[in-house]
Each structure stands twice: as C-alpha cells, then as structure tokens.
Amino acid sequence: MFDSLSGRMTGVFDRLRTRGALSEADVAEAMREVRLAMLDSDVALPVVKDFINRVRERAIGAEVLESISPGQAVAKIVNDALVEALGGAGAVPLNLNAAAPIPILMVGLQGSGKTTTAGKLGLRLGGRERRRVLLASLDTQRPAAQLQLAQLAQRAGVASLPIVAGQTPVQIAQRAMETGRREGYDIVILDTAGRLSIDEALMEEVRQIRAVTNPAETLLVVDAMTGQDAVNTARAFNEAVGVTGIVMTRMDGDARGGAALSMRHITGAPIKLTGSGEKLDALEDFHPERVAGRILGLGDLAGLVEKASDTLDAEESEKLALKMLRGKFDLDDYAAQIKQINKMGSISGILDMLPGMGQMKSQLAGKDLDTSVLKRHTAIISSMTKSERRTPDIIKASRKKRIAAGSGATVQEVNRLLKQFDDMSTMMKRINKLGAKGLMRQGLG
Ligand code: GDP
Image (cartoon, rainbow, N blue to C red; front, side):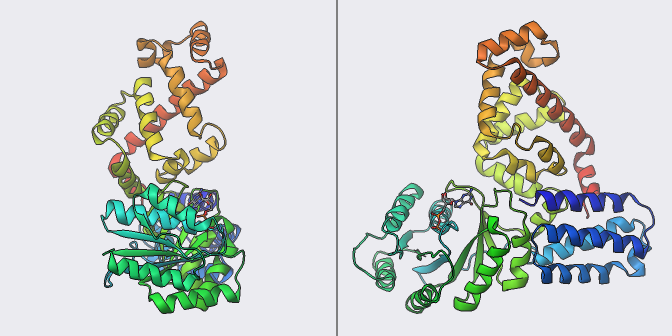
C-alpha cells in the first residue's frame, strides 16, 4: 500500500531537501508534482485541492522560504498536512465507555472483510485485553455466514451466540444482548449481513438493529483495494446510518492508498483500525503520523518496534540487532532472521515500515518477497559448511553446485541468495552509518 505515492513523494522531497534556497516557483512546482501523485493514487479530488491549498498557504510564507533549510521546512508542512488529512496525530481508540455488555456493530458491503474483522476484534479484545467477548452473526442472508463467524470465534478463543434457525436479524441482535447481560459478557460484537451494493433495505435493517442495541461503536468495514469506491461506500453508509469509525482492510495489498487519505475529509469519521492480512492477528490501530511517515519515505519505526515486540523473541532479536550493528552478520544469522521474519508475517509489510526501503521494495517486487523463497533460503543455508555460512565470500562455483544439489535448489537460486545477502549487508551498513541520529536528521523533526 502507498508504494507509488510514497515513491513519488519521496522523490519530490528528496530534491527539495537537498536544495539550499527555494523560490515560490520551486514550491509551486513541487506542489504540482504532489498534486499529480495524489490524484494518481486515487485520492478524491476535493481532498487533493484542500490539501494543496493548505500546504501552499503555509509554505509560501517568507518565514519558510528564508529559513535555514527551506526544503526541510516545506517537507514538514506537507507531513503535517498529511497527518491532518489522515485524521490528526494519534490513533483514535475504540469507544468502550459504556455499560457492559458493550455492543459493537459491524457494517459494510459483502466481501469487505467484515466477518474476518469481527473475528480479529474478538481475538484482540478477548485475548490481549482479556475482556469477555460474545460474537453474534446477524446475517440471515447467507446460510453459511453464522457458521463462519462461529468458527472464527472458536479460533479467536471467544464465545459465539448459538445459532437459532428462523430468527430475523433484529431478533438475533436482541437475543445477543440478552445473552450478553445474562451471562456477564463485557462486549457483544454484532456482525450484520453485507450486500453487494448499497441498498435501502440493507440500511433500514442496520437502522433497526441500531435502534434495539444502541451500539457504542458502529464500525464500517471497507476494502482499501476498492479505492474511490471505498470512499463512496463510506459516504453512503455514513449518511444513511451514521458510522463512528472505519476499519480499512487489505492494507497488505497494493492499493494505491487514496481511500485512506480521503476517508476523513469525505466522511468525517476516523479510520480506527486497519486489516493487513487474513490471519486473525492482522489487525492494527491506525496511526496517521506513522502512515504519513511511510508515505514520505521516513518509515514507521515505531510501528515496526511495536510489531516486533508483539511477535518476536526479544532475546533473539536483540542478539541479531547487536550483530548487525557490529557488522558481524553472517548467513547463520540470516537464517535465524528468516525464522523471526516468518513470525512477523509478510516481508513487504516489514519493508514498508523501514525508512528508505520503498525503493528497495520496488526493486524486489515480485522477486524474492514471499515466504516460500525464504524457506528455500533456509534449506540452502543449511547445506553450507560452517565456515561458508560465516564468510560467504569463500563459496566458489564448484561448491555452489554442491550446495544447490544438497538443498534441491538450482545454482541460480544459490547465487540469488548470496546476492540478496550481500545487498542486505550493504543496506545494514548504510543504516548503521546513519544511526539513530542520522535517521532523525533525515526525518522532519
Ligand atoms: P465479509 O463478506 O465482509 O464478511 O468478508 P469476509 O470477512 O468473509 O472476508 C472476505 C475475504 O477477505 C476472506 O477471504 C478474508 O480472509 C479476506 N480478508 C479479510 N480481511 C483481509 C485483510 O485485511 N487482508 C487480506 N489480504 N484479506 C482479508
């Protein structure tokens, strides 16, 4: 997500930042490029206009142009405007300040990821936050829907409402709330039926369910991959039933990102959560300032650290990090790292969070980014001798053949692994050289 937008924005600001003096014309030119990049990324036109006007107004002031590093100052203004467009600094938490059982209503079109998100929320609230959660599917349209949610609930380790045939969605909602009260649940997540498109019957159903349950949150689930349509869907739902927060799914896809940037302006509702995969733990809070950082190529180190500390073996990671810092990273460490990376999910997702990695990602695009390749890498590495793993430079052609044969790989694959390892070492050295201070200097702070 955001790859192309980020690539272009990074380009614009890299050029601006390296310039000493800036004229109004330079700023205007940069703004023209930003405008085009945003439009190409499917950001809604009124949002782009508002954004550009805001930045232009702030950037053309003499104070900015005459500052010591005007490029930096303009980049900071753009960063701030991006954060604003995305909803303002800081994640907006779910509103759970109601008397138990707290109803959370999930709405959205069919296929947007609504049911999956209900399961993810169950896992988060029930697992990490240790609340007693009851999931209930109000979908009487698709016979399998209630069963799907029951299975998700089981995987998430939370309860689901027993299925009773023949009830209407409103009756199920009432039964869910009664069960919630009677059995002492903290939170009741109500998953409504989706439709293929917006229709009045759907909206009326949601309104009735709202009336009988009075939800603390009405979360609209939209698919980021649907771009402008996601924004139109959100507008329609918000006008018809009122939503308190948006969950944007498929952030792991290659959506251009315009929907995320348009949502707040068009609907007024904050994006509260994002989905980044099919697994139940692929649910994240939405931090506008981190997303802005990613768009401007500054990475999302805070997000990466958070994700790492959630999933990784802290001791192991620290050991690897230390080795990297000392430039003593070898193929054994690489294999250990693969193991850790596999735990964290998609590699492209991780690259997104690293500063300046956008370009590397586009170079790697479609090449060695999936985890099956990493598994093969692990096999290849285990066919090497100890000294080869420590100093890969000593591996000559004849050994490559043997290693390939030993691991069921081709010589090309062995070569590719060695090349990738080499690139990675170079990248690490570059990051090390920048160090924490360097990263900050590159940043906008
Ligand atoms: P619903 O009709 O809105 O309830 O949609 P589902 O929850 O059944 O999801 C439809 C499909 O999208 C399923 O195959 C999910 O696994 C998948 N899905 C849901 N959220 C995400 C996400 O964040 N990323 C990806 N890649 N797939 C997702």
